[in-house]
Image 1: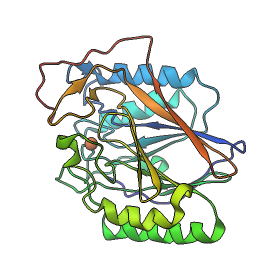
Image 2: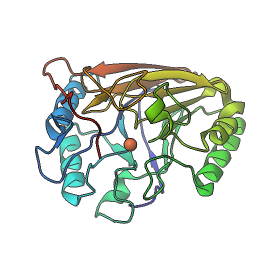
Image 3: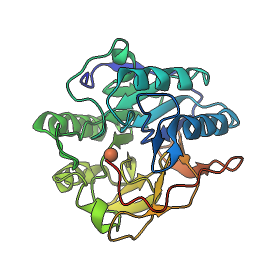
Image 4: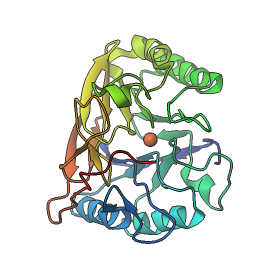
Length: 274
Ligand SMILES: [Fe+2]
């Protein structure tokens, strides 16, 4: 997996409108299935939904892009998103290929995205061979430097990760969050309301405040997991994504968008996913 590196600058209206997509889990073959759901088809439905929105400035993909580490899955992901004609920025999840490099990844795996009034920071929480998340020293150092910069230039930050920095109230998933997430939250604490964290991995919507920082998770573009569950349990909500509007004065607004023109029933007899 290519490291997150480099910067991109977005020229947007004073309000930057970004969409978070997560846990697309595309398989090696088109039409591959996860917990009973064709992940290409559910991604296509979410892209259709995005295409119906007013203009979007960027897509942020927060990991578990491919379900089985195949190059074909990443190529199909790129093709699926291309139709939206919006720049897309990706970071890896625990299911993504940690050791492989694919042509064209550099375009997507950016470290820092500059909007007119906000900075978007992409962090890697993946630890090869592990399901749970962890921030390496280099990730924490990058975050600390960015926060120090923000305290000086007063530009608010949107931080994107795959694993959440803290639990969301599902015992089986809370064992997999970033194990040193408290350290990242304490780094962000001086920014308070001028920092926002968006994460994936848990395949469900959540909104919490930790150390004075708003932290959100997002539905997957395929199977959903049931909020409040002690162990693996699917949910019957539709695939979706998160819209985030970043305002010039430092405030933001966000809401979940869900597919409503096609149904994607999950296999309720499934006892887990690899
Ligand atoms: Fe994940």
